[in-house]
Image (cartoon, one colour):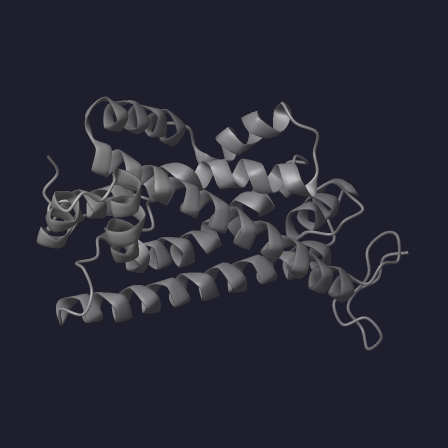
Length: 254
């Protein structure tokens, strides 16, 4: 029942006669929901751990950083596969698994910023007048970490989409019949001895264009916020690379 792209079905149909364009559009919703929620939860959780780790220091910092390093030692897709192997496959578990892969990067980058902020005079003054640690961390330190947090979130959206698509292709993502770009690629590859080009090309094109768009958006956010930091309107922002490493600017860890 599959058919090549034509006037009635612009992206063609699959073996079950389903319109590929409709499935790509529907898959956009699922893939973006997974990516955005996973990045929001993972980056936020990692950032909070980074602030706590930097401010408290000592054994708390040591333990948290070793835990983050253990998570960071695993490749993203492998770590997500290990987590999903112990959970029932569903939309929620896929979001949870991808969120956990984002925690180490948020924790280490935000920690590098918070290490310098905790030595600022206004933090020392707040401590001198008797403010408790929780108030200082969330009232005085956390607001100064918003700019690098935004850069992290936008930079990792593209990565989260690639992880979700990879999981879907491997059969460990959101289970069918829910359409995602990843399981559409898997269906195109395993549904016949000779894959139909239009079944793989259009979901792959959607992944490529979306990831590229988020990467460009993240780069533009980083450029704008870095310029604001250079003029003194924001705290110095660390440079975040696509390889998930970071090079902190004007940051001396203790």
